Image (cartoon, rainbow, N blue to C red):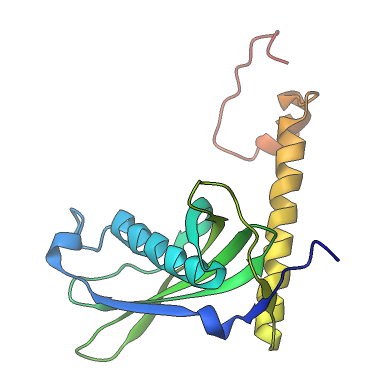
Length: 189
């Protein structure tokens, strides 16, 4: 089969972890660590994980499901763990888990989980094939399947709302439960 990768890698072989102490310069106006700073670190670890798997330069294609669950305080140790959850032909989904640890009392908080889609590139900027993925435990299979479902949901949403026959009036009943006023001109359909 020509569409099969030449080689495969285990999830464990390209897993990456980083830890960094959060400093006052990383904080926002409320004294918590700035979300943009955390996103920057997440992009770096996603790049490292994807590049390690693909053995080439990678770019960020999309970021999904960034939920900031718990604030991160100055002085906490932030650890990010990244692994390949899914591979396509030239793309990879990198799952990232962010935890913070209060180094004085040892309390660990789950702060964020996210999914970065990364695309492998050659030195000319062309997309290149990535190695296949060896799934060797139940959690890795589950993560792969969840990535497939997220992709299918995203595609269905794009089809639904970008279709040429889309009409907001088809959704008026559903929109009634929200705090909005809809004042469409008669020709807006």
